[in-house]
Length: 176
Image (cartoon, rainbow, N blue to C red):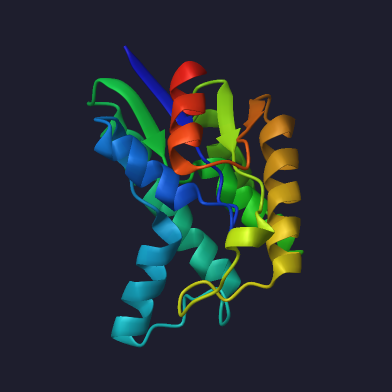
């Protein structure tokens, strides 16, 4: 049986570090779309970047998440997604952009496990870098948008504690 669960994209929350720890413990993880898309777009001189063309960036994220979703269908055991299809809806809402009907439809049709783990933004570990150019306020707004988006789609939210990676990994393993 496959248990697919998503970790919505909240910057400055330790999500990627947690997923690396879960992978080290033998769990199957699916990679983050946003950072890979940004790296590729910068490399090729593309404009589908969150600071240049958010709508096109969202379309590329949607395609990536749908591909990851389908790929996970052939895998066994718990599968943890760095992001999920609903993240694209939340991302668009954070920036006041229209959510295309096909994006909303994808979020409604391509379902993950009912329980979704969300890591709240954590001021202590907050930092930006070449690919994450968000302010603290944007991190908080993203968190709120992800909670609202996933709840509106009928998911149960499990907030991760502001704790060490090991404690967070134990929390996740206890709650799947």
